Length: 595
Image (cartoon, rainbow, N blue to C red; front, top):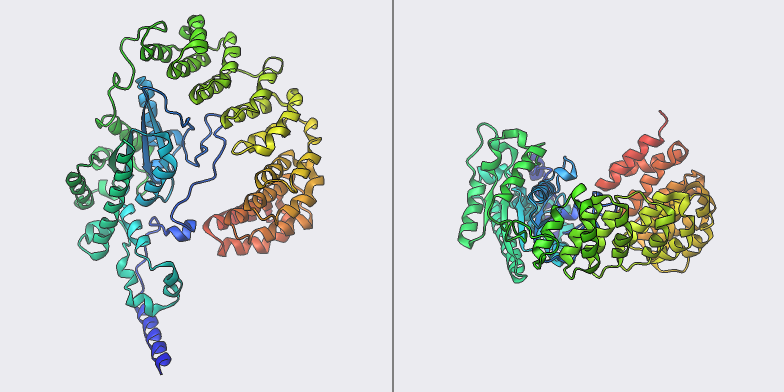
């Protein structure tokens, strides 16, 4: 009787939902669990080399910087989402990068970190500060607020607990009883049209709680938190509603004495040209944002940032003036000051001075600067080592001059120095064949630089083929990172590693997802579409780890028409897989299907 009553209520609830469908939530308001499987993510970390690589070792779209904080340097961490990351524009056009360029042109010793990824809300930005930005010891933390943050916090944090969520998805009765649709904010417009609804009020409360939690952490670290508030494009169009959302945020900031900058007045004069879509900035909009941040009063003035005017020369007793002099030297001027620069690189006790001198020597383009810069790869300071590597990268490598230094650098404790060495060895190509042994020694313990080491191996030409047996042995019985590195390197050897297909197929079942992904990548790069390889990659499409399936789909695409047997599995993945897997399967289908 009771069960029958529940069944009747469930049926009634389903009929109710049929006639009163839940309003659709705007696609820019993400469900974290559906998109990432958790409440935080980063993209795959890279070696951040060469220096203009788009993604850094933290998995962020920004240049790499040493954790070591230089003296007289003010650091700014900008936390944000895809607007801050620069979705739809080039990396150098994102407003944190444009702000950095403005400050460098003014020779201000300020570093700007772009700590942002697509889909992050204030919750992820707080976690990003704690997990990613905090080690760099920023002085100012700017949290960039997009109005969909409020909706995402409300919709994700108001969901039922995990133990109840499965039943909530299955039962219309439970959804009606819990007022599922009433808890959601459907789009940003609702913040303006229905600001007094329970969902919107709850969204603001969650948003403000995240900001207060972030401020407490930032202040405990001795830094300052400030807000940058972005409008949506419809707010700069004719007939735009009153900026109620901005007023609510401004009132909160006033109560809490929290610095905030409203960008609606900054972007409104440009109109829709400030945007590439509903909320992402165009290069023009990003430039206006960068200038507004520069002029916000939140940053130290040039003298406070450590650049005294006028500089007192490289012989000054004041390290700030010595650093300022080195920073100002460019091209011919740096060449003319070469003896003094070399003296300061070798003997100055201040790491800020040595860092600026290393960069000036790179700008000098003087061949005499190469040996001292090579010696600086072993400097105690991380900043100096990185600056020396970047300076050396501006010179064309010469095997007779550079190979001993590069081989030695492969054993550095600094991953960026190792990355530089591997990249330069790859530039030398077959002329660096003597580096084979050192590369094989470095590869097992490599972290983010394993791809560069593998590329260097492949660049050696026929010499590298002799590394295959060693790499095959690394695939079995070693540590997970060594197995993954070996698989990656075998893939970089291409067709010359075809004899390694059997152990790579075995590695597709490795207990570690990283090894399985690298084995799939290698099978695609070696490029032999035999039935065993195709079948193994098809099985990998269903791997419990999404990234393994994504790499397997990409590898099948590399195999081209020879992987036609995978078409049914790829078609299924295109329609039923995760967003990333579906996209990669679609690209693979385009490469495999007959034209």
